[in-house]
Image (cartoon, rainbow, N blue to C red; front, side, top):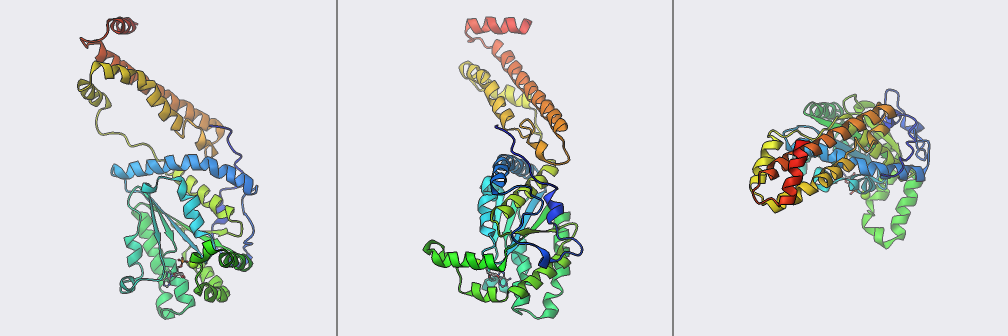
Length: 374
Ligand code: AMP
Ligand code: MG
């Protein structure tokens, strides 16, 4: 379990980083880490602790989806070349079970995609219930690169902002939480990162000669991004603007926002529609006395390892604002109590079943009888 790392967020990063009314991209210092009262080292420590919390939250969402739940989460990641979109997939999503993550990258539309409405390929890639979808680029390219390069007439792209808002609103209504992240590097930092790609033969595959054409249109892209933030940072699907010159900052911020979002979804392990007791009795009927004895011995270990994994018991919900330490301790104590009751119930039922077995070793029979009498 270890020591709880310091949570150095001065405020909820969703409030600090959100593009709200009056937002001006030109004033964003790309080399800053808004809302975070620490540096890289502290960020890594918190990321590490979140890396233990995220997989359980994600697994709960997945379990909910498998048992009829409709909820999902979609992380839309935008940014110019070298902003670090790939790093998010590795460092943030790398922490969770790949079967619960639906990753899609959107490049220049294929011949097939180009025949359809621009949202066609997006709809096809939406995360199924219970999963976390990650879009590396998205439908926003259809008002970014498309706008900057005049790929369709203004009359057409200018109508897309409203259409996108409506599209996302419907998504949210259907149970998808939409988180939009824009990773913003400075012109200088992009130059350095592109040069590194040229210097290293293991990075050449990431370089595209077209990247320089895009870089030459820096200002046009900033204007197009500003318009995106003004027109599409809605209450149902807000934009979070992440200064990205420090590679660790967007990773930390996205991890934190995702963790807080999942925590607030109040995800609980689904309750079975069948009776544990009945199923345990039926299963026991098919087991030898010898293996039932083994199972009795394993009961504590099984439940205790679940208890050790439980985020409530581990106190980690405490790091999420809205729950203070005392409250978290209460939640932890209550959850622990419930686990212990589960152990007792399982042990008691197994002992009852075993007592009636004719081939139960005498010594154990005596012990269980004595225990039953209290
Ligand atoms: P990368 O993410 O580096 O693999 O590059 C993908 C490229 O595809 C970028 O240059 C994007 O601008 C481009 N792209 C993505 N979506 C579209 C689109 N709808 N129309 C034109 N180009 C696009
Ligand atoms: Mg690229």
